Amino acid sequence: MTSESPPHTTQEAELNWKPPGSWFSIKISLVIFSILVIGNLSYFIYLENFRYRYIIVHHTASQTGDYQSIKKIHKKERDWHDVAYHLVLNNGSKSKPTGYLEASSRYKKLNHAVATKSLWYNHHGVHLAIVGNYEQSKPNKIMQQSIVNAIELLKQRFHINNNNILMHRDCSATLCPGKHIDNTTLTQWQKQWSSEPEKSIYNQQKNVIYNTHLSLTNIDRYWHHFVYLNIFLILVMAISIIFLV
Ligand SMILES: [Zn+2]
Image (cartoon, rainbow, N blue to C red):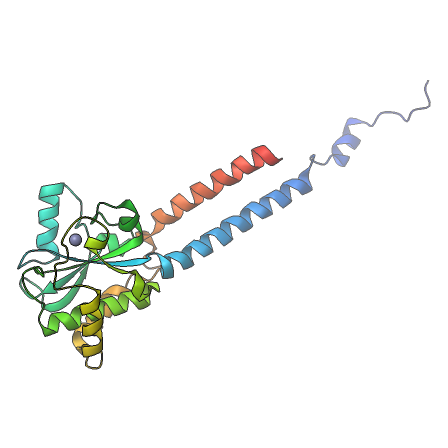
C-alpha cells in the first residue's frame, strides 16, 4: 500500500469533470460574437452613408434615350446585365419627362459601375449619366436645374464634397460629358437655379436617390454585401486564432 489517496471512481470522475479551457472558449466566443456584431453594424452605417466617395458625371452622347433604351444598347453591345451607370437623367426625348431620374440595379444594390476604365472610380464613384450630347450643345434651363438638383441630392445622400464631383474625362481619356458641362458651369448653374428649384423634379429625384435606404423591407437588395463581409471577418478571425492561440 502507498500513502497516495485512492483513485477516484468513474462516477466521481464524471461528476468533477470540467471541459478543459471552457472559460477560455466562452471568452473567445464572446470576442468573435462582438466582432461580428460591431463589424456588421459599422458596415451598415458605411453603406447607408458613405458607400460612394465621388460623383462622376457622364452624358450619353446621343440626342435621345432613357434607362430602358440604354440598357438594351449596353446589353446588345457589351452583354452587360444592366446599364453601365447608377443613375440616368432623362432629357424628355423618350418615355420619361425632362429631369426624370431613373436608378439602375447597380444603384439599387449599391454596387459598382462599369462606366469608366478605372476600377477605382467604378467602385468608389456614383455614376450619373445625363441623356443628350453636351459636346454639341448646352443643356436647356430645365436640364440645368435637373442636373444641379440631382448632384446636390447625391452630395447630401453620400456626404460628398464639391472637390469630389468629377467629369468622366477626369478619370479616363474621353470627352464625356462634353465641353458644355464642367465644374465651373455646374457651380454657375447651382448659383443661378438653387433659389428656384423645380419642385416636381426635386421630389421625384429625391425619392429615387433616397429610396435605397437600408431597411428590413429591402434588405434582399443588400444581403450579398453582408455575406462577403462575414466570410471575410470569419476568415481573418480563424487565421488569427490559429496563429495566436
Ligand atoms: Zn462617360
